[in-house]
Image (cartoon, rainbow, N blue to C red):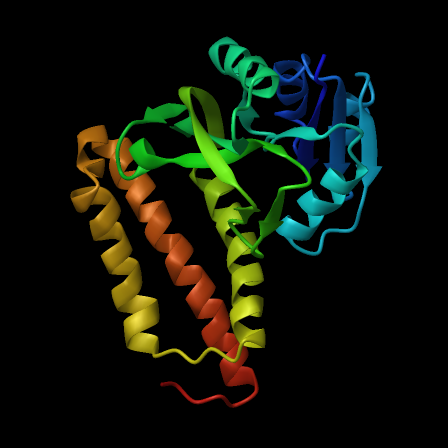
Length: 254
């Protein structure tokens, strides 16, 4: 029988880690790769039959690729700690690894929950990620919002996993500050120049309009407004941090 390794990257995920592990309990091996959490994440994970790897965080792709290299089995299912594999997706996973046809990996769509509310619009209806793949054919690329680079064809699952992304607005802001800092450092190293008016004022407003109006976020009512506002903040913070880095060494605006 074909075997599978499940990988869960973590950093201070004590509210999620138990449910995440249990949702992939069907895997033959479970690896939790932890970026030195300061909460109870590791102690909770130790209660389960999982392999725990502690590794200093550098970027999301490197962290995941390192864990993939440690996996015993060829098939990998990787999930963020705030994701849950549904019974329907579990069936698709087994069906796919048993008969993958010509595919080296599979996209799965996600049902997105923001502050406990199901967000159906605002772009979430398009949300998909590669989660099941063959490790010799797929690797992660990108510092933030990393994506799979596949050497071969990718298929699609019919069913969705659940994505409990942010417990509240403050949690989102905290995450966006972290992601923004990583992205700003990447842009800074690439010597990216920006114009304050366009990148820090116009682009965030445009992002809000896209999520709330163009992608029908208004149909989610107040939660759609909050989600669109949060997306705009994510754009604002990464470019503000880059602008401050550039100012520090005297790089002029475009």
